[in-house]
Image (tube, helix red, strand yellow):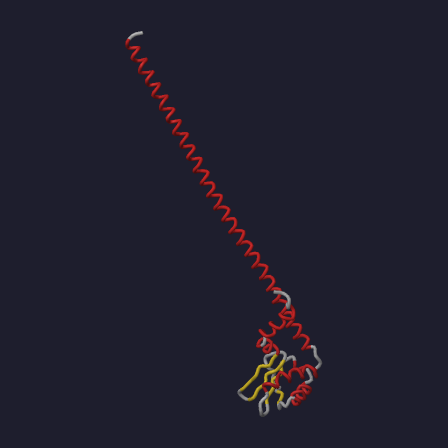
Length: 196
């Protein structure tokens, strides 16, 4: 072998050894990078899983709260319906009373508003169809001096009691609206006593 071939062989051998060393070093660095990436990926996936679990818990809690509110609102709505139905039934029952009982009831309503002097009473449109002499008698029994006007009040049932410039709206709708909170509270206690 010639000197040239020996030099060239030596260079090739040295180049192969250097390449092999570089390849091993690169393989070692790649392995370290892969290991570090695996550790980092594991930590990141643990963070992602933890965040997802927290988000899932929050979503579940919100869904449970929303469901509880929906149930509560439905119960309240149903209770309100029942209270309104009860008020309506009570009004219907009062309207079905015979004239004597009905006007006795209305005269009891008028009594706290009675003043000295003669009042003018504007009877509701539909109550005008009843026997108003019974009403006049019931008012007299309560000591209320009154003239029944030919003009009706704006309501269908009940009446407006007028002493000149002072008027008391004692129509059934006005009375119910005026005492609605008290009525609803009493009806609620009766219907839903044990329900909290």
